[in-house]
Structure formats: structure tokens, C-alpha cells
Length: 476
Image (cartoon, helix red, strand yellow):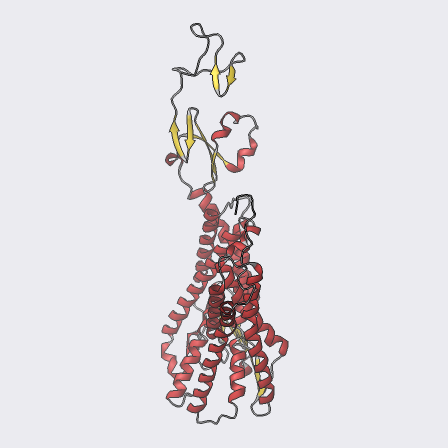
């Protein structure tokens, strides 16, 4: 093949379903779903055997387990169950995202990625259809009402679509980043860290409150009956641990948590009956302490850190904090999704979970307002001092437009912008910047030669026509 011939077309992976490629797609479609079904079957059978029950309602319980893992609201008898454990849901989404990420090849085209997304959705949706049919048949034997079909397919498809997008985005971020403004990616990274830090603080608050109220944990195990009941309550508490952490995070930012007819916030507690789960001993009783509002310093500090990171990782300026606002918006959207997933109806106890609207709004406010303070700190107080920079003339980059266009024409070729601290550096005459280093250049003559109208510039050499002892000067 000569240099003039075009390159041969790339082999689109998964475009022709060879046995190897079909095997990879089958893994994406079936591995996570099959492991989930096996785990649910084992759990249901173990529960039935421990309770000395028959296998009459096993199929309905397995179908309900699959739907519950995917956050599909259930109705058992006349009891609505909308607040479902998030730990198994998170595990399923993580495994599905990992399978999709492993299926992506460096040369995968958009059609190939479409095959992967289709495979990631096909397996779970097929099992969901089977579970809906089983739940319909089992409703005459067990007190399980068939859930809404559209809601079931929407929840299952949405979770696995999110997992596929996350897995593909991790392996191929270049599919999206070229089409985004420069400040979106730093803002998204800062938003991810904001959510992580808030959840970490919520986890710490949950652990501290759980240890403080440890003496009440025995009351929650009184209805367990036997060892199997104790194990079941413990496992159920661990499954609901992410829900409690999200509730604690909502309290930290200043929002409230619904406890049926009651509520919980940093500013007050309204008591109400709650389910007797061991993990819920972390819910405090009695009036709120006067020092609790001090905890609002945590989201403020998180917001300041986010603004500082946006300032250092992007071109955010005081007059245009786009990355900081992006971080605030995306972090608010993230906690909104988490808040919706963590709450719901709990039968006779009523609604349990965070107040989503207040949770979302306060997260945006803290991240945007405190983030702007962090941006100011990064630009004004944490910038490198002038003594540490090479000698020269410094001006604020935002104020450079105030100067006439021709005032700095002599040094335009030497201008070097420092985006991290908002200054424009202009070297002194007689110096140059080569590969980021300041180089002192000695003048060709003992005194500076000023070019006049009689000077001729030929091939970058200065020729003086009126020198006395020479007809030509070669620059030496």
C-alpha cells in the first residue's frame, strides 16, 4: 500500500457477530442479571425454610425480590412499600457498569456501543417481563398485587441504562468531552467530589448517632424470636444503611427528614412511630440540641473546597464562575436522585425519607455560594506572590482590555498568560521565554541600537547603510 492510498476501513467490533463477540454480548446481557436472580432465589428459600413455611409463595416472593432490588414500588395486601433498600440496588448497578466497561474496546464505534447498550438492557427487561407475569399468577396465592407495568419497566430499564452509560463513559470519555465547553468537565468532577464528601459526612454522622444510642438496640431485636430472626433483622438493617446515610446527609445540609407524621432536622424533632429496625436507633429522640446548627459548617466547607478546585482546574474567573455553577447544579441533581431513591411510603408508618426539594435546593445554595467564596480565595488569597515570579510587568488578566491596543505591541510576542492566578506576565526588554524558561539575551552592541527610518531589514538582519568602515554588516 502506497502513501497515496487511503487507509483500509477499521473492523467495527461487534458489527459482525462472531462467536467471540456474541459471547461478550451475552455476558453483558446475562451475567449480572443471572447472579441477581440466583441470590434472590437463595435468600427467599433460606427465609422460607427458616420460618418453617412451605414453598407455595416462593415464585411470587422471587418476583417481588427482583422488582424490589430495582426500586419498583410494591403493594403487599393493602400495604404500600415504596422505601426499598438501596444497598442491593447499588451492587447490581455497579456490576452491570463493570460488565459494560469491560466489553468496550478502544476501537469500538458508535454502532458497537449501541450493541453493548442493547445487550445491557435486553437481559434485565426480559427477566422483568417474566417476573411481572409470575406476580400476576401469584397474586391469587400470596398477598402481592402486580405492580404497574410501565413503572416496572421504567425503573429496571433506567437503572441498567444508567449503568451502561457509566461503564461506557469511564472507558470512552472522549465520546462526550469534545462537545462540551471547557468548564463542564471540571465542574462535573467537582460535583462528584461534593456528593462524595457529603455522603462521607452523612456516614460519619450515622455512625456517631448509632453509637450514642446503642443502648436502645436491644428493643429492636425483641420481636426477632430466634437466631434466624436476628440474622434477618441485621441483614435488613445493612441493606437499608445507604438510605439512612442519605437521610443523615439531608439533615447535615439543613433539610428535614420525613418520619411519617413526624420530622427530623438540625432545628427540631417531631416524634412519630418508626419501623423497629436496628439501624434506625440512630434516629435521635427528644428536642434538638442548641449546638446542632453548627453542623452546617460541613456543607459550607465542602462548597468552599469545590469552588477552590473549580478555580484551579478550569478557567473560572470572578466574573465568570461557570465551572462553580456547573458543580452546584450537578451536585444538586445528584442528591435529588439519591433523595428520591432513599424515600417512599412505608405502609402504616407513612412517608419516610428526606425532603427532596429542600435537600436539592440547599445543596445547590451551599455549593454555589460557598463555592464562590472558595473561588475568590483561590484567585485573590491563594495566588502565587509576585516575588516568586520572574521580574517583569504584571497586570490583572481581566483588566488587560482597559489598555490601548498599541501600548504593549512591542512585547506581544513575549506575553505569557498564567491561568491559575489570573495574571498576565510580560517580560522585561532584553529577555525571552524559551520552553517556559526565562533566558537573558545580551544586547548585540554595548548600547541598544534603535532602528530608524534609514535602517533596512533584510532576512532578519539589520543593515546600516551609513557605517564608515564597511559596506555591509553581517550582524557581528
